[in-house]
Image 1 (tube, helix red, strand yellow):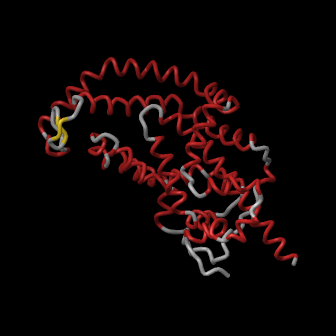
Image 2 (tube, one colour; image 1 turned 30 degrees about the vertical axis):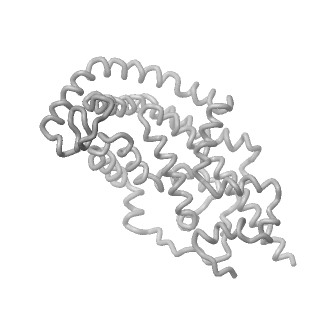
Length: 308
């Protein structure tokens, strides 16, 4: 029984023990390398979505009409409201510059290469256009994400029998995780979505005036939730219970947090973030595929040990 626990146990399983590393089959070597840095799967998802016709063609066909209608409405909205919103922001900044540290041409006293009023108006308008597109794409983009996952898994040549029942990977006792907590119940209810919306749309609004700050903070708050949601189909395919999911995520907490942060960061970008909601599903499927290969390796190793 190993005395290593926590994140170190994950590394020790494949990397730090030469005898274990030598047992890893060649087919699992690249997956093991990628698993050491989960955010890389976000990049993999973007690359595959933009280069694989089996992924981007069905996604575009499903979202084309909604995108066209949303773009027309967004264009009209921009034409009618940009000047009004810019004027409103000018009045707001003129009356309360100390609240957010901005003035007409400075940020905390430093000269900036653009007009703050214009920048803030464009940023605000970008968020509004994103919401307009999301409204017109709400149902179809959800279907496109589900299909992107299925098509990615199919591209690896795997069927439903590929997903094994949950197997505890580490040789240490899994962490104690209490699933039935008030925070978990809150997340399962609509009130959890309201709280998340309040944090993102109200508490973090002042930070959106600083280039990149609002997006980064929002991504950090959403990191674990985003990663958990992106692997929802993985947990479903393995028929994992809530307790098993909680243990699985807890053991890989920082893997999920870093992957979720990177994914949420891209999804938080105005307009183009909607594309990344699909590519992140592709990346999550690739990560799930490698995690499952690890589960197969552990299952086979333990079967050999029992046979001795």
